[in-house]
Image 1 (tube, helix red, strand yellow):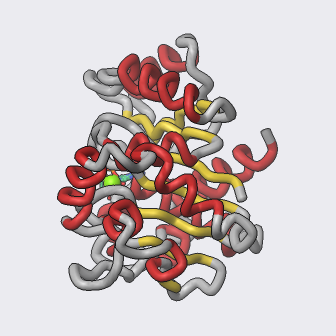
Image 2: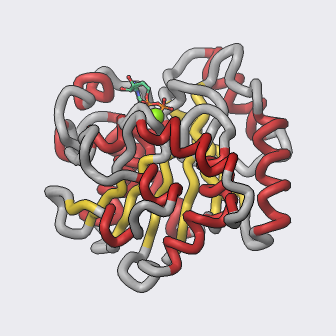
Length: 250
Ligand SMILES: Nc1ncnc2c1ncn2[C@@H]1O[C@H](COP(=O)(O)OP(=O)(O)O)[C@@H](O)[C@H]1O
Ligand SMILES: [Mg+2]
């Protein structure tokens, strides 16, 4: 199983959209067995996968040791796609994990994922826009990091801090690699083109494919579908397919 953390310190840069669509494409087009993990208390990924609930077991229970991962994993409409949901309980769980110095705080998720490593080809962890102990757990469990970036004046804020966190996590997880930045919500104007060019000249790897901005991305959040199902011909849906192809080829 390859584990990918989708992360950026900024909100609204398409972390969840990228996780949902990458997972669906890997499952539908490539027949891969995929586990997605919602690591954001907002539960957007859980809602997109139709598994959100305030009462069911969730990532919070895995982190606090209340439940094992196999009890928490839920099935979705796609038989190859399973999900670990999250909800607001993740907030308290993070505080509990930090206080409990007797446990290996940063490796809880990694240890739990080892139990299901043979059941999935890919595990994609959708992170929140900050760094807390559940995000550090994601970085310690992951093989690779993907950073979705929406080009605007604030797009690169927090990149140095994120890089520092990735480097810190490498002490516990030497295999961790920044696989690439993915430009999202791209539109064909100078600001986007120049921002993308600037990013390509920095020290971070950048995927060649960018994801075009499309209205359908907002519409789809009112459904339990991915863009692939809701609007397969939209620019963003086609770009996500090209992105996954590039991801698998490189
Ligand atoms: N390619 C896109 N084009 C237009 N809007 C998008 C695109 N990707 C995502 N969005 C919208 O941007 C908002 C933030 O996306 P989301 O994936 O929730 O970001 P994050 O998880 O980083 O906070 C959502 O309203 C989503 O519908
Ligand atoms: Mg999100």
